[in-house]
Image (tube, rainbow, N blue to C red; front, side, top):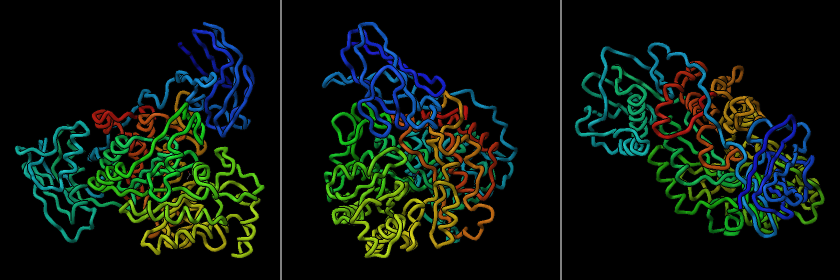
Length: 612
Ligand code: ACM
């Protein structure tokens, strides 16, 4: 049996053609959109769950093509680009499910690159650019270092994995490594002469970053490295990349590949989003039901095939996987920050573990993604019985000693229909949902602190009349920088990841052939550096800004490889903002640097968006 499928945008509508080479009786057309769909013609909507839908079709005769016309239920939503067409589509006939072909090309497509200007004279093709570069005369013909220092092992291994030439070779350039106690732990000095190399650093991180600089310059300059001295150190200690592995289960190999790219750009924090409405993906001993029941979504699962999940997709990260990820991260100077995501975005958790909702709750809470009742209830004993051991077990798996609790996007009117929360409000003198959330987060955070774990959360955790989560939490400002500034002024340390500049699930452009979301606008490469982590007028918060992070949400990814061109080259902007001094690199220089990195990414077989 051969099925065909295609879909296209016609104004506000989505026109789908479904064909079969043999007769099909009463098929159900199953698919997901970015948000709830409606059917305009060609079938009857029989089931809908967030963006997932089942549409009953009439019989399709052998060789015939049946047309279904869809639209977004919210009349303000229009299909923006190919991502907004049906994803993960399949036909269900009785108990049999058969996948439909994707219908259109998937993921970010390469396009003609806009013309990059040559790099300004004296600019090293290196991202992030070093704080200081003093050229001298001459050029070093460099192909490898001659050094047995073990602190170079990780860079040599990275070179091999990235399909670069070996970084170390007995007949390479002699390298001297000096300890300089006056340098900070990530700082380094790299002196290049026509006959040798000297690295000065104060510990393994500095040596590692100096080696990364050398490796990168070899790749971007064809082994002709200008002589001189680089003196370098990062502006921020937190230089992160987030990856949503809940909406899409990325393989361990893909995560390790991402670590190589992060390491090349001197990014040092991996924010691992392993839980959301769709799944809890970490193997934990304290609550096996949580990951065992939610690992897969699709037919017969607790969560249907939302966000292109199709007939069945997913997976769990085992404890062995976590060990593999942590070992590679440590070698590359990356720390891993796990996120378990509560109280909202917890649909899967609520379905897997009984007792997390108030049975007397008669309110209706609809999340922005269209989930009903996806927030756990802090007045239920089962909530605490699950969360307290869960937090401690997850945090205990990760040496960073910080646990991200989530806390974004509580649905409007959360808990307003819950008699148990009404009682909790009376008992704890809480007025609003924000107060209840703040109280809950503070209680969880205090438990973490009592166990020597630092709490972290999205910006919303600062809400509530008790001051929110408190307890020295690290907050992530994502709707913009305003909430981060406000939180910093109230004493929180903050990581800046404003969606408008740092959310790589956003499409680069408004082109209907592009791929990605658009709720915070489009994000061309230049915009990734058109901001400052310490915004003008908020210089007072500088000591509270821990750093910068790029985020990549999985709603826009159905295959691992699609992540690559969403990240590259925009991840260069994250590295620039996180490491360099304010305003050091303009958008047009970043464009030129991205052009210089093109062959390096190609060598790594890392897809990139060329028409950003
Ligand atoms: C978020 O993007 N909801 C943190």
